[in-house]
Length: 371
Ligand SMILES: Cc1cc2nc3c(=O)[nH]c(=O)nc-3n(C[C@H](O)[C@H](O)[C@H](O)COP(=O)(O)OP(=O)(O)OC[C@H]3O[C@@H](n4cnc5c(N)ncnc54)[C@H](O)[C@@H]3O)c2cc1C
Image 1 (cartoon, helix red, strand yellow):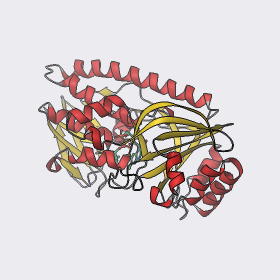
Image 2 (cartoon, rainbow, N blue to C red; image 1 turned 30 degrees about the vertical axis):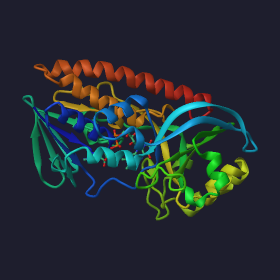
Image 3 (cartoon, helix red, strand yellow; image 1 turned 90 degrees about the vertical axis):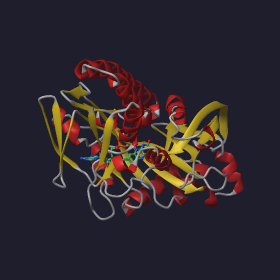
C-alpha cells in the first residue's frame, strides 16, 4: 500500500517510522524547505512514548532527556513549600525532532512540499502541492498540525477556538545561571501556583542534546488569562505582523516585552522574576481548543494536532500525536479492508482524545485559567 504523510513534525515522523517498520511504501511531504529545528522549547516525554522510541532504536535511555526526580511547589517567597517524588522526563522539541528525523530515511522525506489540495475518489487519493506536483497514493495521512489543510478538506469550518489564556515561554542557558540557581532548579519540576495563574520551570537538554550540568537549558512556562482583544495585541509582532496562534522567539513587540517584565516584577518571587527578566527572547503561544467529529473519511486520515488540540496541562500534545501514529500503523497492518481498519482506529483514538481534552479543561479550571 502506498501512503503519503503531509507534515514532517512529531506526528508525521512517528507515523512514517511505524509504517515503514511494517513494510508500507511511505513518503513524508513537509511544507518547510529548511529543517524544523531551533523553533521549539521544552516538553514532557510520556513513558509509553519513551519506551517505544527506545525499542524502535530512535533513542536510548541514557540520552533521552533530563529526569526531574522531584516536584517542588514554590511559595510567594520562592521557597519550596512542598517537595515530593516525581518521575517526569523532559526533552526539547528540537532534540526529539532531530532524533525522529535521523530514524527516517532522507530519501523518503521531502521538504518544500506545501499541500494545496486533495482529490479522493475510487479508493485512490491525490495530493496537489503548491510547487505544482501531484502525488497519488492509497492512503493520505494529514499530520499537518493546528492549521491543517487536510482537516479543512475533510471538515471545512472546524477551526481552533481561543481558550481564554496564553503561555509565555522562555529558555535560559544554564551557563547564565549561578551554581546555586542551577542547583535550585536541577532535577526538579518547579511550580509556582497563585491566583488565576501559574508558572512552571524545568531543565531540558541543551541545543544539541547536551545533558551535562551547565550545558542544558532552563525552560519556563507562564500561563496568564487574557481577553480576546488583548490576545490580538500580543499576537501582533514587533514588525506589526499579526500571527494566528503564536509569536516565535525574538518577535515579541517591545510593548509586550515590557508588560511581561513589569508583570513579573509585580507578581513573581525573585527566583522566578529574575528568570523572566534574563530571558533574551521569550515567546508566546495562545491556548486553543479544537476537535473533529471523525479522524478519517474515505482514504484520508488525520492525526495529532491536525485532529484534536489538548490543553498543555496534560503534557500530551506530542504523546497524542505519537499514539495516533503508531496505533494507525498497527490498525492497518495486514488489513484487507482499509475502511473497517480505519474505523476501528478512529473509534479508539477519538475516545482517547476526548478524554484528554476534558481532563485538560478540568486542570485549567482548577488553576483558574480560561473559560
Ligand atoms: C516548529 C514547532 C515547534 C514546536 N515546539 C513545541 C514545544 O516546544 N513544546 C511543545 O509542547 N510543543 C511544541 N510544538 C507542538 C507539538 O510538537 C505538537 O503538539 C505535537 O508534537 C503534535 O505534532 P503534530 O505533528 O501533530 O503537529 P505539528 O508539530 O504542528 O506539525 C505539523 C507539521 O506539518 C507541516 N505542515 C503544515 N501545513 C502543511 C502543508 N499544507 N503541507 C505540508 N506540510 C505542512 C508543518 O510545517 C509542521 O512541520 C511545536 C510544533 C512545531 C511545528
